[in-house]
Length: 481
Image (cartoon, rainbow, N blue to C red; front, top):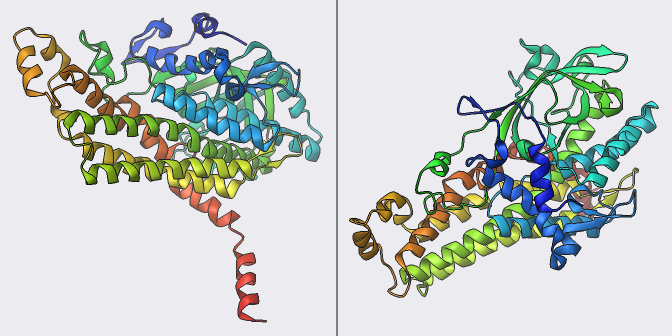
Protein backbone atom coordinates (compact mmCIF):
# COMPACT_ATOMS: atom_id res chain seq x y z
CA UNK A 1 0.00 0.00 0.00
CA UNK A 2 1.09 3.58 -0.62
CA UNK A 3 1.87 5.93 2.23
CA UNK A 4 0.28 9.34 2.38
CA UNK A 5 3.52 10.91 1.15
CA UNK A 6 3.87 8.42 -1.72
CA UNK A 7 0.31 9.10 -2.78
CA UNK A 8 0.85 12.87 -2.87
CA UNK A 9 4.06 12.44 -4.87
CA UNK A 10 2.30 10.11 -7.31
CA UNK A 11 -0.15 12.91 -8.16
CA UNK A 12 2.76 15.15 -9.14
CA UNK A 13 3.48 12.72 -11.99
CA UNK A 14 0.04 13.27 -13.55
CA UNK A 15 -0.34 15.75 -16.40
CA UNK A 16 -3.94 16.85 -15.93
CA UNK A 17 -5.48 19.30 -18.38
CA UNK A 18 -7.16 21.29 -15.60
CA UNK A 19 -8.72 24.77 -15.63
CA UNK A 20 -9.97 26.87 -12.71
CA UNK A 21 -11.21 30.47 -12.69
CA UNK A 22 -10.46 30.64 -16.43
CA UNK A 23 -6.79 29.69 -16.12
CA UNK A 24 -4.89 26.46 -16.68
CA UNK A 25 -3.57 24.95 -13.43
CA UNK A 26 -0.09 23.53 -13.86
CA UNK A 27 0.41 22.33 -10.28
CA UNK A 28 -2.85 21.12 -8.69
CA UNK A 29 -1.02 19.44 -5.78
CA UNK A 30 0.15 22.73 -4.27
CA UNK A 31 -2.66 24.99 -5.39
CA UNK A 32 -4.20 26.63 -2.28
CA UNK A 33 -7.78 26.20 -3.51
CA UNK A 34 -7.32 22.51 -4.41
CA UNK A 35 -4.92 21.35 -1.66
CA UNK A 36 -7.53 20.93 1.12
CA UNK A 37 -9.40 18.42 -1.05
CA UNK A 38 -6.14 16.55 -1.65
CA UNK A 39 -5.55 16.46 2.12
CA UNK A 40 -8.97 14.86 2.65
CA UNK A 41 -8.25 12.25 -0.02
CA UNK A 42 -4.78 11.64 1.45
CA UNK A 43 -6.40 10.83 4.80
CA UNK A 44 -7.63 7.57 3.23
CA UNK A 45 -3.97 6.59 2.85
CA UNK A 46 -2.78 8.09 6.15
CA UNK A 47 -5.32 6.29 8.33
CA UNK A 48 -4.61 2.99 6.55
CA UNK A 49 -1.06 3.24 7.92
CA UNK A 50 -2.27 3.71 11.51
CA UNK A 51 -2.39 0.37 13.41
CA UNK A 52 -5.39 1.47 15.49
CA UNK A 53 -7.52 1.77 12.34
CA UNK A 54 -6.15 -1.25 10.47
CA UNK A 55 -9.31 -3.34 10.87
CA UNK A 56 -11.48 -0.66 9.26
CA UNK A 57 -9.09 0.88 6.76
CA UNK A 58 -7.56 -2.28 5.29
CA UNK A 59 -8.76 -5.65 4.02
CA UNK A 60 -7.38 -8.85 2.49
CA UNK A 61 -7.54 -9.01 -1.31
CA UNK A 62 -9.59 -11.95 -2.57
CA UNK A 63 -7.30 -11.91 -5.63
CA UNK A 64 -3.78 -11.82 -4.15
CA UNK A 65 -4.33 -12.54 -0.46
CA UNK A 66 -2.35 -9.38 0.34
CA UNK A 67 -3.33 -6.58 2.68
CA UNK A 68 -4.89 -3.75 0.67
CA UNK A 69 -6.60 -0.44 1.30
CA UNK A 70 -10.30 -1.09 1.86
CA UNK A 71 -11.12 1.48 -0.82
CA UNK A 72 -9.79 -0.98 -3.43
CA UNK A 73 -11.52 -4.04 -1.90
CA UNK A 74 -14.38 -6.13 -3.30
CA UNK A 75 -16.73 -6.74 -0.36
CA UNK A 76 -16.53 -10.41 0.62
CA UNK A 77 -19.14 -10.48 3.38
CA UNK A 78 -21.75 -8.44 5.19
CA UNK A 79 -19.03 -7.70 7.73
CA UNK A 80 -17.06 -5.99 4.94
CA UNK A 81 -20.12 -3.91 4.07
CA UNK A 82 -20.53 -2.85 7.71
CA UNK A 83 -16.83 -2.02 8.06
CA UNK A 84 -17.11 0.13 4.94
CA UNK A 85 -19.78 2.30 6.62
CA UNK A 86 -17.78 2.50 9.86
CA UNK A 87 -14.68 3.48 7.89
CA UNK A 88 -16.59 6.24 6.13
CA UNK A 89 -17.91 7.60 9.42
CA UNK A 90 -14.37 7.62 10.80
CA UNK A 91 -13.05 9.58 7.81
CA UNK A 92 -15.93 12.05 8.03
CA UNK A 93 -15.02 12.61 11.68
CA UNK A 94 -11.36 13.16 10.82
CA UNK A 95 -11.87 15.57 7.90
CA UNK A 96 -15.31 17.21 8.41
CA UNK A 97 -15.44 17.21 4.60
CA UNK A 98 -15.90 14.94 1.60
CA UNK A 99 -12.88 12.62 1.34
CA UNK A 100 -13.91 11.70 -2.22
CA UNK A 101 -12.69 8.09 -2.52
CA UNK A 102 -16.05 6.37 -1.96
CA UNK A 103 -17.27 6.88 -5.52
CA UNK A 104 -14.47 4.77 -7.00
CA UNK A 105 -14.93 1.98 -4.44
CA UNK A 106 -18.66 1.84 -5.13
CA UNK A 107 -18.14 1.92 -8.89
CA UNK A 108 -15.61 -0.92 -8.78
CA UNK A 109 -17.88 -3.17 -6.72
CA UNK A 110 -20.82 -2.48 -9.06
CA UNK A 111 -18.84 -3.15 -12.24
CA UNK A 112 -17.15 -6.23 -10.74
CA UNK A 113 -20.42 -8.11 -10.24
CA UNK A 114 -22.13 -6.70 -13.35
CA UNK A 115 -19.35 -7.74 -15.76
CA UNK A 116 -19.50 -11.30 -14.42
CA UNK A 117 -23.20 -11.55 -15.23
CA UNK A 118 -22.83 -9.81 -18.60
CA UNK A 119 -20.18 -12.35 -19.60
CA UNK A 120 -22.42 -15.19 -18.40
CA UNK A 121 -25.27 -13.97 -20.60
CA UNK A 122 -23.36 -12.70 -23.64
CA UNK A 123 -20.11 -14.68 -23.78
CA UNK A 124 -18.03 -11.50 -23.53
CA UNK A 125 -14.73 -11.08 -21.63
CA UNK A 126 -15.52 -7.94 -19.68
CA UNK A 127 -14.99 -9.54 -16.26
CA UNK A 128 -11.54 -10.71 -17.32
CA UNK A 129 -10.77 -7.15 -18.42
CA UNK A 130 -12.02 -5.77 -15.14
CA UNK A 131 -10.04 -8.26 -13.03
CA UNK A 132 -6.88 -7.16 -14.83
CA UNK A 133 -7.70 -3.54 -14.06
CA UNK A 134 -8.66 -4.28 -10.44
CA UNK A 135 -5.47 -6.27 -9.82
CA UNK A 136 -3.38 -3.29 -10.87
CA UNK A 137 -5.46 -0.93 -8.73
CA UNK A 138 -4.98 -3.14 -5.66
CA UNK A 139 -1.30 -3.87 -6.27
CA UNK A 140 -0.41 -0.21 -6.79
CA UNK A 141 -3.02 1.20 -4.33
CA UNK A 142 -4.38 3.53 -6.99
CA UNK A 143 -7.07 6.13 -6.42
CA UNK A 144 -10.04 5.57 -8.75
CA UNK A 145 -12.73 8.11 -9.57
CA UNK A 146 -16.16 6.72 -10.43
CA UNK A 147 -17.86 8.65 -13.25
CA UNK A 148 -21.56 8.07 -13.84
CA UNK A 149 -23.43 11.37 -14.21
CA UNK A 150 -23.85 12.64 -17.76
CA UNK A 151 -25.02 16.20 -18.35
CA UNK A 152 -28.20 14.67 -19.90
CA UNK A 153 -29.42 17.64 -21.98
CA UNK A 154 -33.18 17.28 -22.61
CA UNK A 155 -34.38 14.94 -19.86
CA UNK A 156 -37.42 13.94 -21.90
CA UNK A 157 -35.27 12.39 -24.64
CA UNK A 158 -33.24 9.17 -24.75
CA UNK A 159 -29.45 9.50 -25.19
CA UNK A 160 -29.58 8.68 -28.89
CA UNK A 161 -32.43 11.18 -29.47
CA UNK A 162 -30.68 14.30 -28.12
CA UNK A 163 -30.24 17.28 -30.45
CA UNK A 164 -26.55 17.18 -29.54
CA UNK A 165 -25.34 13.55 -29.40
CA UNK A 166 -22.50 14.47 -27.02
CA UNK A 167 -24.83 15.32 -24.13
CA UNK A 168 -24.43 11.68 -23.09
CA UNK A 169 -20.94 10.18 -23.31
CA UNK A 170 -20.81 7.80 -26.27
CA UNK A 171 -18.62 5.90 -28.70
CA UNK A 172 -17.79 8.02 -31.75
CA UNK A 173 -15.42 5.61 -33.50
CA UNK A 174 -14.67 1.90 -33.30
CA UNK A 175 -11.29 0.44 -34.30
CA UNK A 176 -9.78 -3.07 -34.05
CA UNK A 177 -7.79 -1.90 -30.98
CA UNK A 178 -10.51 -0.06 -29.09
CA UNK A 179 -12.98 2.81 -29.19
CA UNK A 180 -12.95 6.60 -29.10
CA UNK A 181 -15.47 8.30 -26.80
CA UNK A 182 -16.83 11.85 -26.57
CA UNK A 183 -19.07 13.50 -24.01
CA UNK A 184 -18.89 14.83 -20.47
CA UNK A 185 -19.35 13.68 -16.90
CA UNK A 186 -20.59 16.27 -14.41
CA UNK A 187 -20.17 16.73 -10.65
CA UNK A 188 -17.10 14.49 -10.57
CA UNK A 189 -15.98 14.28 -6.96
CA UNK A 190 -12.25 13.77 -6.41
CA UNK A 191 -11.26 13.45 -10.07
CA UNK A 192 -8.24 15.76 -9.69
CA UNK A 193 -6.95 13.58 -6.84
CA UNK A 194 -7.37 10.27 -8.71
CA UNK A 195 -5.08 8.20 -10.92
CA UNK A 196 -7.82 6.42 -12.90
CA UNK A 197 -11.42 7.09 -13.87
CA UNK A 198 -13.97 4.26 -14.08
CA UNK A 199 -16.76 5.39 -16.41
CA UNK A 200 -20.28 3.92 -16.29
CA UNK A 201 -23.58 4.60 -18.08
CA UNK A 202 -25.80 7.11 -16.32
CA UNK A 203 -29.26 5.60 -16.98
CA UNK A 204 -30.93 2.44 -18.26
CA UNK A 205 -30.61 2.12 -22.02
CA UNK A 206 -32.79 0.74 -24.81
CA UNK A 207 -32.39 -0.36 -28.40
CA UNK A 208 -30.82 2.46 -30.38
CA UNK A 209 -28.62 3.56 -27.47
CA UNK A 210 -25.87 1.00 -28.10
CA UNK A 211 -23.12 3.60 -28.52
CA UNK A 212 -24.05 5.08 -25.15
CA UNK A 213 -23.97 1.76 -23.26
CA UNK A 214 -20.26 2.00 -22.54
CA UNK A 215 -18.18 1.36 -19.42
CA UNK A 216 -14.39 1.59 -19.25
CA UNK A 217 -11.38 2.80 -17.27
CA UNK A 218 -8.62 5.16 -18.42
CA UNK A 219 -5.96 7.26 -16.65
CA UNK A 220 -7.25 10.64 -15.50
CA UNK A 221 -4.62 12.44 -17.57
CA UNK A 222 -5.46 10.64 -20.82
CA UNK A 223 -5.19 12.64 -24.03
CA UNK A 224 -8.51 14.29 -24.80
CA UNK A 225 -9.66 14.76 -21.18
CA UNK A 226 -10.20 18.36 -20.05
CA UNK A 227 -11.21 19.27 -16.50
CA UNK A 228 -13.06 22.41 -15.41
CA UNK A 229 -12.93 22.90 -11.64
CA UNK A 230 -16.26 23.56 -9.92
CA UNK A 231 -16.89 26.78 -8.00
CA UNK A 232 -17.71 26.49 -4.30
CA UNK A 233 -19.16 28.99 -1.85
CA UNK A 234 -16.43 31.03 -0.09
CA UNK A 235 -13.66 29.25 -2.06
CA UNK A 236 -11.54 32.34 -2.65
CA UNK A 237 -11.13 32.85 1.08
CA UNK A 238 -8.34 30.28 0.69
CA UNK A 239 -6.44 32.82 -1.42
CA UNK A 240 -6.63 35.70 1.07
CA UNK A 241 -3.59 36.84 3.03
CA UNK A 242 -5.35 36.15 6.31
CA UNK A 243 -7.01 32.77 5.82
CA UNK A 244 -6.29 30.86 8.99
CA UNK A 245 -9.66 31.57 10.63
CA UNK A 246 -12.04 32.67 7.89
CA UNK A 247 -11.93 29.48 5.76
CA UNK A 248 -13.40 27.57 8.71
CA UNK A 249 -11.63 24.30 7.89
CA UNK A 250 -8.16 25.22 6.70
CA UNK A 251 -6.77 21.70 6.27
CA UNK A 252 -9.54 19.66 4.63
CA UNK A 253 -12.11 20.07 1.86
CA UNK A 254 -13.63 18.52 -1.25
CA UNK A 255 -14.01 19.27 -4.94
CA UNK A 256 -16.03 18.53 -8.04
CA UNK A 257 -15.11 18.98 -11.69
CA UNK A 258 -16.79 18.91 -15.09
CA UNK A 259 -14.91 16.29 -17.10
CA UNK A 260 -14.83 16.68 -20.88
CA UNK A 261 -14.00 13.63 -23.03
CA UNK A 262 -13.00 14.72 -26.54
CA UNK A 263 -12.22 11.64 -28.63
CA UNK A 264 -10.55 9.80 -25.75
CA UNK A 265 -9.16 6.44 -26.83
CA UNK A 266 -10.10 3.37 -24.77
CA UNK A 267 -8.17 0.12 -25.48
CA UNK A 268 -10.21 -3.08 -25.81
CA UNK A 269 -8.83 -4.54 -22.58
CA UNK A 270 -10.06 -1.47 -20.67
CA UNK A 271 -13.69 -1.88 -21.80
CA UNK A 272 -16.27 -3.40 -19.40
CA UNK A 273 -19.52 -2.81 -21.36
CA UNK A 274 -19.82 -2.02 -25.04
CA UNK A 275 -23.28 -1.85 -26.53
CA UNK A 276 -25.14 -4.40 -24.36
CA UNK A 277 -27.97 -1.96 -23.61
CA UNK A 278 -30.02 -4.24 -21.39
CA UNK A 279 -27.19 -4.41 -18.83
CA UNK A 280 -26.61 -0.66 -18.48
CA UNK A 281 -29.40 -0.47 -15.91
CA UNK A 282 -27.80 -3.20 -13.81
CA UNK A 283 -24.59 -1.19 -13.43
CA UNK A 284 -26.55 1.97 -12.64
CA UNK A 285 -28.73 0.26 -10.03
CA UNK A 286 -25.86 -1.46 -8.27
CA UNK A 287 -23.61 1.58 -8.20
CA UNK A 288 -26.46 3.75 -6.94
CA UNK A 289 -27.23 1.20 -4.21
CA UNK A 290 -23.64 1.07 -2.99
CA UNK A 291 -23.28 4.84 -3.08
CA UNK A 292 -26.55 5.40 -1.24
CA UNK A 293 -25.23 3.05 1.45
CA UNK A 294 -22.05 5.17 1.61
CA UNK A 295 -23.99 8.24 2.69
CA UNK A 296 -25.03 6.42 5.86
CA UNK A 297 -21.37 6.61 6.88
CA UNK A 298 -19.62 9.68 5.47
CA UNK A 299 -22.42 12.20 6.16
CA UNK A 300 -22.78 10.81 9.68
CA UNK A 301 -19.09 11.40 10.41
CA UNK A 302 -19.35 15.00 9.19
CA UNK A 303 -22.52 15.32 11.26
CA UNK A 304 -20.60 14.21 14.35
CA UNK A 305 -18.21 17.14 13.88
CA UNK A 306 -21.05 19.61 13.32
CA UNK A 307 -22.90 18.41 16.42
CA UNK A 308 -19.71 18.75 18.45
CA UNK A 309 -19.08 22.25 17.10
CA UNK A 310 -22.64 23.27 17.93
CA UNK A 311 -22.34 21.97 21.48
CA UNK A 312 -19.09 23.89 21.92
CA UNK A 313 -20.70 27.06 20.56
CA UNK A 314 -23.31 26.80 23.30
CA UNK A 315 -20.63 26.34 25.95
CA UNK A 316 -18.65 29.33 24.66
CA UNK A 317 -21.79 31.50 24.73
CA UNK A 318 -22.81 30.31 28.19
CA UNK A 319 -26.07 28.77 26.97
CA UNK A 320 -25.17 25.09 27.19
CA UNK A 321 -27.38 24.41 30.21
CA UNK A 322 -30.53 25.86 28.65
CA UNK A 323 -33.16 23.16 28.13
CA UNK A 324 -33.89 24.16 24.54
CA UNK A 325 -30.19 23.92 23.67
CA UNK A 326 -29.96 20.44 25.14
CA UNK A 327 -33.13 19.38 23.35
CA UNK A 328 -31.89 20.59 19.96
CA UNK A 329 -28.57 18.79 20.41
CA UNK A 330 -30.52 15.62 21.23
CA UNK A 331 -32.56 16.05 18.04
CA UNK A 332 -29.40 16.53 15.98
CA UNK A 333 -27.94 13.36 17.47
CA UNK A 334 -31.17 11.43 16.89
CA UNK A 335 -31.23 12.39 13.21
CA UNK A 336 -27.55 11.64 12.72
CA UNK A 337 -27.72 8.21 14.36
CA UNK A 338 -30.83 7.35 12.35
CA UNK A 339 -28.77 7.83 9.18
CA UNK A 340 -26.08 5.57 10.61
CA UNK A 341 -28.68 2.93 11.50
CA UNK A 342 -29.81 2.88 7.87
CA UNK A 343 -26.24 2.48 6.62
CA UNK A 344 -25.59 -0.41 9.00
CA UNK A 345 -28.98 -2.01 8.29
CA UNK A 346 -28.61 -2.17 4.49
CA UNK A 347 -25.10 -3.54 5.00
CA UNK A 348 -26.08 -6.26 7.46
CA UNK A 349 -28.77 -7.49 5.09
CA UNK A 350 -26.46 -7.70 2.09
CA UNK A 351 -26.30 -10.77 -0.15
CA UNK A 352 -23.66 -12.49 -2.25
CA UNK A 353 -23.60 -11.81 -6.00
CA UNK A 354 -22.79 -14.42 -8.65
CA UNK A 355 -19.32 -12.86 -8.95
CA UNK A 356 -18.69 -13.44 -5.24
CA UNK A 357 -18.73 -9.92 -3.81
CA UNK A 358 -21.57 -8.71 -1.59
CA UNK A 359 -24.36 -6.32 -2.56
CA UNK A 360 -26.25 -4.29 0.02
CA UNK A 361 -30.00 -4.61 0.53
CA UNK A 362 -31.18 -2.23 -2.20
CA UNK A 363 -34.46 -1.24 -0.53
CA UNK A 364 -32.77 -0.29 2.74
CA UNK A 365 -29.95 1.51 0.89
CA UNK A 366 -32.51 3.66 -0.89
CA UNK A 367 -34.31 4.36 2.40
CA UNK A 368 -30.91 5.39 3.79
CA UNK A 369 -30.29 7.88 1.01
CA UNK A 370 -33.87 9.19 1.13
CA UNK A 371 -33.26 10.13 4.78
CA UNK A 372 -29.91 11.68 3.82
CA UNK A 373 -31.73 14.05 1.46
CA UNK A 374 -33.50 15.51 4.51
CA UNK A 375 -31.78 15.00 7.85
CA UNK A 376 -28.46 16.85 7.23
CA UNK A 377 -30.48 19.94 6.30
CA UNK A 378 -32.30 19.82 9.62
CA UNK A 379 -29.06 19.16 11.49
CA UNK A 380 -27.51 22.16 9.74
CA UNK A 381 -30.57 24.33 10.51
CA UNK A 382 -30.34 23.49 14.19
CA UNK A 383 -26.59 24.17 14.15
CA UNK A 384 -27.22 27.64 12.71
CA UNK A 385 -30.01 28.18 15.22
CA UNK A 386 -27.74 27.46 18.17
CA UNK A 387 -24.62 29.13 16.75
CA UNK A 388 -26.37 32.49 16.49
CA UNK A 389 -26.02 35.36 14.05
CA UNK A 390 -22.38 36.02 14.88
CA UNK A 391 -21.56 33.00 12.72
CA UNK A 392 -22.20 35.16 9.63
CA UNK A 393 -21.65 38.72 10.89
CA UNK A 394 -18.34 38.54 12.75
CA UNK A 395 -15.51 40.67 11.31
CA UNK A 396 -12.91 39.21 9.00
CA UNK A 397 -9.62 37.79 10.16
CA UNK A 398 -7.91 40.72 8.46
CA UNK A 399 -9.79 43.05 10.81
CA UNK A 400 -8.92 40.84 13.76
CA UNK A 401 -5.20 41.00 12.87
CA UNK A 402 -5.31 44.82 12.61
CA UNK A 403 -3.68 46.13 15.83
CA UNK A 404 -6.10 49.06 15.97
CA UNK A 405 -9.20 46.83 15.73
CA UNK A 406 -8.19 43.67 17.54
CA UNK A 407 -8.80 45.06 21.07
CA UNK A 408 -12.37 45.97 20.12
CA UNK A 409 -13.04 42.57 18.57
CA UNK A 410 -11.48 40.77 21.54
CA UNK A 411 -13.65 42.80 23.90
CA UNK A 412 -17.00 42.79 22.15
CA UNK A 413 -17.06 39.26 20.67
CA UNK A 414 -16.25 37.70 24.02
CA UNK A 415 -18.64 35.07 25.31
CA UNK A 416 -17.75 33.12 28.45
CA UNK A 417 -14.85 34.95 30.08
CA UNK A 418 -12.59 31.89 30.21
CA UNK A 419 -12.85 31.22 26.45
CA UNK A 420 -10.46 33.14 24.15
CA UNK A 421 -12.33 35.27 21.63
CA UNK A 422 -10.22 33.83 18.81
CA UNK A 423 -11.34 30.29 19.71
CA UNK A 424 -14.96 31.38 19.51
CA UNK A 425 -14.36 33.00 16.12
CA UNK A 426 -12.67 29.84 14.81
CA UNK A 427 -15.54 27.64 15.92
CA UNK A 428 -18.22 29.85 14.41
CA UNK A 429 -16.33 29.92 11.11
CA UNK A 430 -16.21 26.12 11.17
CA UNK A 431 -20.01 25.97 11.53
CA UNK A 432 -20.34 28.52 8.73
CA UNK A 433 -17.99 26.42 6.57
CA UNK A 434 -20.01 23.25 7.12
CA UNK A 435 -23.47 24.75 6.66
CA UNK A 436 -22.87 27.57 4.14
CA UNK A 437 -19.27 27.47 2.93
CA UNK A 438 -17.06 25.09 0.97
CA UNK A 439 -17.81 22.03 3.13
CA UNK A 440 -21.55 22.63 2.75
CA UNK A 441 -21.21 21.55 -0.89
CA UNK A 442 -20.48 18.01 0.28
CA UNK A 443 -22.73 18.02 3.33
CA UNK A 444 -25.92 19.59 1.98
CA UNK A 445 -26.47 19.76 -1.84
CA UNK A 446 -24.46 16.55 -2.24
CA UNK A 447 -26.73 14.92 0.35
CA UNK A 448 -29.65 15.98 -1.82
CA UNK A 449 -28.32 15.09 -5.28
CA UNK A 450 -25.33 12.76 -4.84
CA UNK A 451 -26.04 9.11 -5.76
CA UNK A 452 -29.31 10.30 -7.27
CA UNK A 453 -31.81 12.99 -6.33
CA UNK A 454 -34.74 12.18 -3.99
CA UNK A 455 -37.12 10.99 -6.70
CA UNK A 456 -34.59 8.40 -7.86
CA UNK A 457 -34.71 6.76 -4.44
CA UNK A 458 -38.50 6.92 -4.33
CA UNK A 459 -38.67 5.09 -7.66
CA UNK A 460 -36.38 2.38 -6.30
CA UNK A 461 -38.28 2.17 -3.02
CA UNK A 462 -41.50 1.63 -4.98
CA UNK A 463 -39.78 -1.01 -7.12
CA UNK A 464 -38.31 -2.86 -4.15
CA UNK A 465 -41.21 -2.52 -1.70
CA UNK A 466 -42.91 -5.83 -2.60
CA UNK A 467 -46.34 -4.30 -2.25
CA UNK A 468 -48.14 -7.38 -3.57
CA UNK A 469 -46.72 -9.49 -0.75
CA UNK A 470 -47.88 -6.91 1.78
CA UNK A 471 -51.39 -6.93 0.31
CA UNK A 472 -51.49 -10.71 0.62
CA UNK A 473 -50.54 -10.42 4.29
CA UNK A 474 -53.46 -8.04 4.86
CA UNK A 475 -55.86 -10.30 2.97
CA UNK A 476 -54.89 -13.28 5.07
CA UNK A 477 -55.37 -11.44 8.36
CA UNK A 478 -58.71 -10.00 7.18
CA UNK A 479 -59.74 -13.41 5.82
CA UNK A 480 -60.30 -12.07 2.30
CA UNK A 481 -60.22 -14.64 -0.50
